[in-house]
Image 1 (cartoon, rainbow, N blue to C red):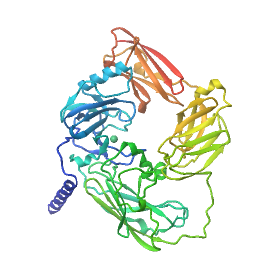
Image 2: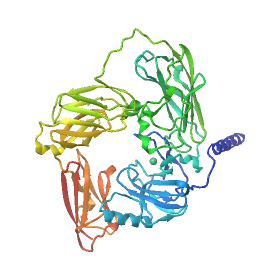
Image 3: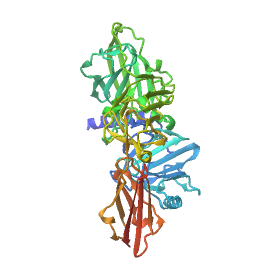
Image 4: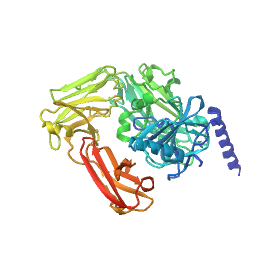
Length: 570
Ligand SMILES: [Zn+2]
């Protein structure tokens, strides 16, 4: 009993700490009418973006009531097979806006407006500001939660924005429990000058970190020696009570010999710089292992505003005296739970006898336009500020072999992030003019994953835009998309309610456009790319009593088209 009381008062203390940091406010109410457990939080590091909201669990199912978090007016409604899927944006007073994503369905009033818009535009995807005012009250059901768009499981994506900038929702006093301190898993040393070495190596080295409950240390007290300019990064995650999901931390501070070197904090994000996450984290480790190392040094092209003004020398350590030094990481979550990682390292003088061989084909400045040409076969153009730091560019060429229409070109086949698209132009004078419109670029990532990019043809030149380095070649796409009805949609008598499914696949360039007509008139056909299928909801579609004819046509990105018709009795 005594232990119980101690635990209880500790919890109370934690709650008080949390309230002291983020005072409870009642402006926003909960966006769901079930207890709030998170599968993702604000500032969490994702692929090409920081997460700009919180992901609230819906018990693994769709169809939970989604509530307006405050009184307001519907500002925007969107439907898409990708991104936020079905989403509602509500404006509140004082320039605040809330966003509700991955919805299953809208309430009747909003749903009617969406359907009208879809039929007027003859498009499943719509994104618009309602013409007539739709007012909502705090706690009113506006939608049902779902899994639409780029969502990996049923949940509600909820955002709070001030103007257009997403805010950390955990600052607004929602009833979410977290008394678990962030976990620290690794510490990484990065050489940042040509003569820099970490334990004698010219590449970054990670060290395993162990510990629990806020106290962490380097395993085996890892002996680290550094020379030249270097920086540090840390692999850390947060966990919330009662759920296993990995979340993001709120703030990080790095101290060297008790002096603050770098500090970042996630109160607010900005969509215009959200892709800069790729230079915020260690991109190479993320792309090869999926681990999120937060760097405590700032690349020249990094425009994120999450850093404290007190950051010293952009976090680059370049003037430490030879000998032993003490470092300390302090990591906090949004509820004031704290973890600490003390560590030590030895600075040794730069080895001036070491020789550095040139092993690159061109040197690209991050803030200037760069071009690279190989004979008259291929030309690469990278706009200024597409790179976040200077690049030692490496080019390679492999002989052409089937099914490629060109050689396979290696354009810096490493994990280097790009903020803006580069343009890659291929000479296609050897390809018959009537075949050229069917050309597509194929890209292999450093691990060998394939993706396809549509380009444009101008005379003897084929150009694609891409934000990824890798290996590139051109291929021809002359295959039609493959459209097949599920068993329940082959034809014949259909029930009064339910969904008809059609599997849709396109091997190379991918689905670009599609259209469904029932008895000669356009109807809503939902595209679900996660399941590679079209979905037709019977009760939402104007089937006639008796015989009906449904025609579905689909085009891939280079215009190969398939058209199928189905006869249904209703
Ligand atoms: Zn989300």
